[in-house]
Image 1: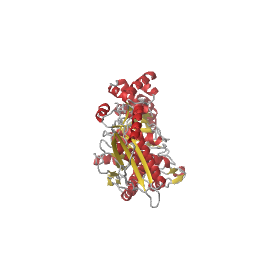
Image 2: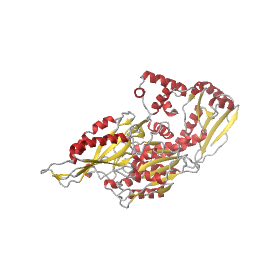
Image 3: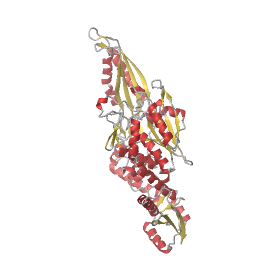
Image 4: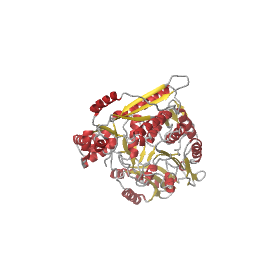
Length: 610
């Protein structure tokens, strides 16, 4: 589709596409792009810009406009997919373009943009838009997929359900008939499940020559619906109301599953080969015991994820998609068994384990204050210790139980260790034991592994942030939240993971719902990530600043840049570093001068500082 002609040391690239429908006029599109050598010879240019080929930003602009025009005419005139396109010769008056090139050189001298493979960029841009346009037309497919997933309840056995087997079989069958990838099943033993097994599926499509994969990690299990009378309709029958879909599990986590299935179907139907592979993990026990889900998968296949893969878990977010979760608190579920003596409430007195448990819970606030470890990066911005569930063996309303069991959900900041917290809780229990004549027994139900925070400079965060900006026109903010156990397992291996989605925080609530528009936008963002290797961009750097880029950045400037990278404003950065707002502005001005970035967004995207 392209040809390069050299004349008067000015290379000219021209594109010509001709389509001739039977019995109709020929349709011809011509785009002429002039590649201007900013510094004379190629050797001189390489010395200045670091030895890599540079292309003028105007050349990039004309190529993008050309492909946009081609997409428009293709849709307007219903050109076939194959497109009867052929390359033909065109005679040009080179002197005119030479004069024009000199003018452009004088007006725009000193500005460059790095493009590793220019024509790969153009092809990637074209096929990515083809994929995006296909996805946006799939409203009916979204409804159909959600209907099939909602009508197959996958409630955890711990919550009284039969597990995920029926749902997993349907997904496996869909992948077999509609997908383009191999599917591997890894079942985990669970005696509580209906058939004693918890299913896990791994689907992986890796085109020839691709070394990188975009992984979407989802879970098939859903929360129990609770009292059915609180729902407007049957929670396991999809209800459609305009742009919204209602049903148990539509947001947590069928929305992530549907995005993955839509992406696979789009790539197959369009018969395109993305520059990156697509991997999807469908796990069991994503809400409760991760050892039967993602933990079991990684134990069987420890090398499933490569170091350069992009891993996204679509299981947390807000309405406008502007939040990316990169860190979580350490989570522990603690079982506390208070043992006393059973007796009749009206005729005798003795140790009351229920009352002792109530005293213990009422004094938890002192332990919470001691280990709050406030940090505005997390939400909520402190450690939490919350009583959540209780059990009893009481046989009647007039009997004092012999033992009372309750549970604590503990979520601690990364800089707060679990051991001292447990020591203080046990010390509090000993004080109550002496007074109430009872015995406290502590046990762990689950402890999430220590997991590092995903750096804001990691490729998955930068690529996802760029896709969000282009699709939703918002600048994402990096946050930490209270424990997502499935993600902690992956991060504990040292792998960077982004947790992101377009959600309304209605998960696990009655009348759970999602927006069809949000579902399609979420899928389009994953499609954009697929083409990131071909659409690499760096901020435009002015030539006069290139030499300043080697100047050393001070530790204070590094700290400011790191907080800018996670989305903090000047006031929050000043509070975090104990500096004034004017000092922060001075550091930012120095960073702009040294890195060549022209605003916070470019500095955030560049973010090569530690």
